[in-house]
Length: 269
Ligand code: ATP
Image (tube, rainbow, N blue to C red; front, side, top):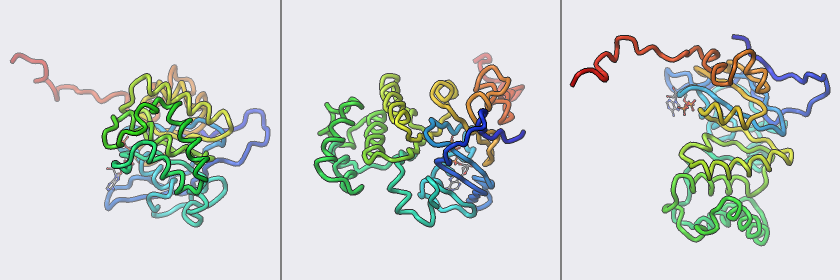
């Protein structure tokens, strides 16, 4: 399957990519998690990174955000090398990692105050931004509750608030909608749409094709540590009727035939 790279149909000069990845590799012992991928994520877009379980999405996002050192390859965010210039790059990005570890014994508001000060923002500005984020994300009522007592969805939302507090150029989110109820998902979605509307870039991983199809301008499909396609939603969808069908075709999984192997399931008890 060829790599369908994003192209500007009008031929106009496009902005430099928000993220450029070249020849990125990561192995864990015998297991190759990421096998020499190239990626160019356009700036100002809502980008979806999709792929089956174990495709290498989390490993890729961890390397791109400076959390996991690659074996080989280069990663640039806004033209700066993530691994040569980590402090500068980290000031420009926000991250909501998988299995987010938070300071559990702080309240939601204290967590934002702490994050804001770590980011070097003045106290009054942190207070103002925290109040607005807590309000927009429906966490104002729980702002004084300890994070340890937050539900899964509340944790995602406070993690998102912490990732947005310093107004990063690029926001990376690993499965931001997993375990989130539809009302909170809609809230997160509105906040992210507003954020990309201002010219910022969001890159997130997901398994939910309908969500990616309705939210993203640009998609990369990953399987077995390789990029199977990348480009605008319509380029990646190609002639398939939906992103879901294109995805199944690209990852070569029309659904595993259970054949005879589960012949006991649903049989007489
Ligand atoms: P999922 O959608 O299930 O979260 P993913 O696309 O995020 O999957 P990764 O978590 O990046 O996939 O994993 C890619 C491969 O690398 C898998 O085979 C996984 O078992 C392996 N892997 C990831 N992290 C480690 C690790 N720390 N040690 C050993 N193997 C790992």
